[in-house]
Image (cartoon, rainbow, N blue to C red):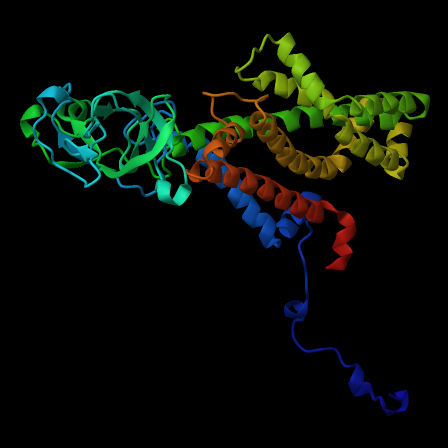
Length: 457
């Protein structure tokens, strides 16, 4: 544009106020700006909400779901979420006198019969027997024709009746009767009977469990509902939801307290080494390298011996001590590197010239400028500590039954993962969610607190 076409009219001031055209942005402190940047990260905010939910789950949850995690519901052992809770009111158990048995309620052409409806109180079987014949009776949860196995051997018999009361639960069982020869070997003669067992409860047990109030209300054959377990029960009939809540208290206590302790120790050690520098710094870091080389599991066993923790006892405190003593070198190295960089800044030199003591310079200028690295390190160490606790409890060196923890529950659940997968799935899912949430929060904090990334916006 040529300046020869400009006239004095082009240089007249604007009419009216121009305050509405001014663009202003309030000044933000370092932490306010970091919080703003963290809020702009949806994954980090979602992880914060998830962590808050987990903390409320293990702290407030037991007050809302007031079920003792050690109480066993023997009528509902190993049930999954949403399992049938119905139970039939029945007379109390009466001893069986098979020689007086005259009524056969169920019969099959092969000769193995039920003498009464099969319930969780007892399954009573009879069959035809000639003199001198011996039998072996089996019980299976699956059809022997499909599996090729008769299942659990119950007894060897030289009589024609048997009463089964071994850990009966509602469901279908397959009883197989195999004839033995004179030498006690099984013959090809086998009889299999399918038995459907129904869950029953006596009047006295129903009153004790609070299902009915008085004996006058009891009506035999009446259907009642047992206690509700939202996430099912474990192999001992203990409520899974309550155990997950109390187990989370142990897992999160170790996962949060241990990193707080060894990160704080590493911050102090690394800041002193970085500030002093020289031969002192080299000597201190060589000692840190020595600690890194120490085997964690070996010291875990050593501390269990020192604390007097025997086989089958929970080793929570030996685990905490081992983590604090052996895991501080990693944060110490990070803080040392930051201190070595910051101590060369001009404001640190100015503070020294003005008479600032070593503790003042480190505490007032250096550590606050490394706080971002410390927070990020903390969030990454928490899932590592939770996973360490879960691993040690899984191999039997951490939290031991009956004390619940997510790792110990995984150790118990893997033994029955094919038949009762919920016992393993729920604690493993909580461990995975917790580790993922803290990792995502650590990523978000690293992005929010890194001043070098602000220029990318």
